[in-house]
Amino acid sequence: MTNKAMKNKKNFMNIVYSMLAIAVLAVLVITVQGENLQGYLRLNTTKQLATGDLKPAARNLSAEPLSIEPKPVDAITKGELAKLIVATKNADVSNFKNCAPDVMGKWYEKYACYLVSEGIMVIASDGKFHGEMTLTRAEGAKVFTIAFFKEASRYAGKAKIFSDVNITDWHYVFVMTLAQSNVLDVKAVLTPQITPGMPTAKPQFRPIDLLTRKSAILWAQKITSNVLNKNILSN
Image (cartoon, rainbow, N blue to C red; front, side):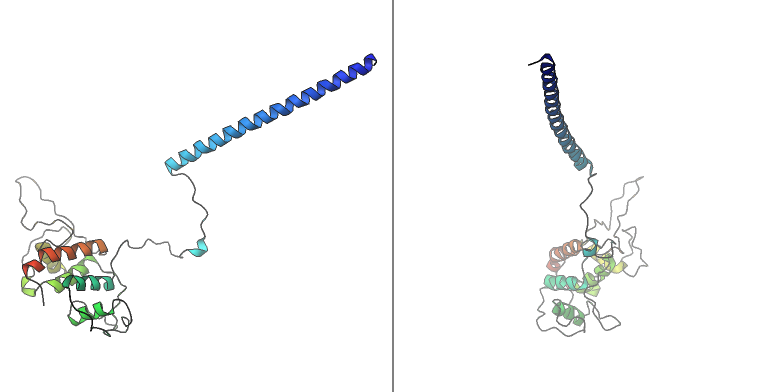
């Protein structure tokens, strides 16, 4: 082999070795970068989870309600309250029905019609019961008072124990009647112990808030323990 041929062969082998070295280096770099990238993604995801920065998955808006207005949480309906009142009174309602066209065939028909017959709830001016409607806390107080207190047993004083319930309010007697018998879910003391020089803070009843199932059930439980056992149940 001539010197020129040997020199060409040596150059060729150097090129091959260089290419192999570059290829091996590229593999190493890609592997390391891949591991680093995965580590970064893991760390970044953890950070996002901790801070709540992760974007939610795409939403199918076509499958969601058009309105995004917040709905009342746990608000009780007239139909549900009717059943709760009946259950608390332990009344037989098997024969009550057809008191309004919109209750016929509804699960709450017998409860609603019993309360209507007793004057505890009423049919609206349009002739319907509207069992799916919600009630305010003031309206709920009226229903509970009429259902469980004889008129002679209702509050007759003029105290102002709630900062948002005044003696001139239509619901004053109903709210105060429940407060007097310790039925409400708000701590109310009719005769607070006054400390000289210290202002007496009055709690809020929140009369225009919607009555929730939780509050209504608590009122019913307190009716059972604080009212029914004292024999002041209305007719």
